[in-house]
Length: 379
Image 1: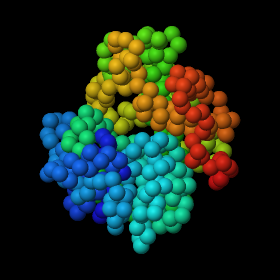
Image 2: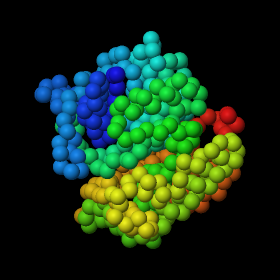
Image 3: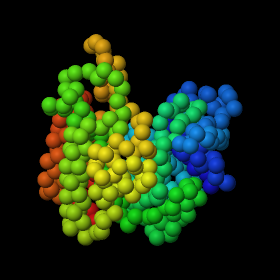
């Protein structure tokens, strides 16, 4: 089986190494970074990943480059790991290079921000594509040295995938077999892709913490940080409380979608339950959202996006971060639009979203362009 990974960032790098530990897997990596491609072509080409217990896994991707016509030759599966805001252009660029003589499984890790709708729109002229996504990353990853090494964080005990609702039962079975060959964790197929779209994740988590750190009345409102901070082990109590309020809003969207569409979205669980089930013994204290976030070893060492303060000493939030351009401009925007179309009040999500738009100043307001114009009447 040939797998083409689109993106050589933390998730792409780690998955490339992990896939090379499996038998009979050809791994191709399409990157937008010429330096990463040059490093692979000019050296031994071996990529490495350090596991949480200190072991080092190594593997040499079979191709690393910037040319989609090379990366996609005879591929069976495409995995998009690039940020959500980079995916529309990527998918349009891939469409003319995908094999046409067999089914090609095009998915995203993670599959959030309406990837099913986005891929169906971008690849509308390619009729041999099966669209899918994973609910979350199989492992966290950090400390990337591009094209060289990355550190693996906590692993999910179970993986969940979903397909675009247009796909067949035979495609579901084939996808499960393919993913089970790539990953050690058991893979469960969800019934509807909305179970991924509404899964509580970064679109709830990062905006809530940002608001609690630098929003109205927060400790660092209009004030630089004096040291680096971690997203979760340094999460303030106010951030955990606001996150729970945003999560309650997300559950309200879930219940309204179930009622309107007549589907079962029971796998969209409250965030704290989701995290406990995903990380299990890696969490030292799961009694509250606050204690869970601060004691989850899988989250340890994941730094908040801070950059040197251009106006003086200290550090400030990086406005170029994916927390803004992916989690807020796409992830939160989509939740806000889904809620509006379903006539559901989401006060906490709306508060953090509107504040983030004002704070950043450069994000475009509005729902993701991938959402079908007639949703939820599309069913």
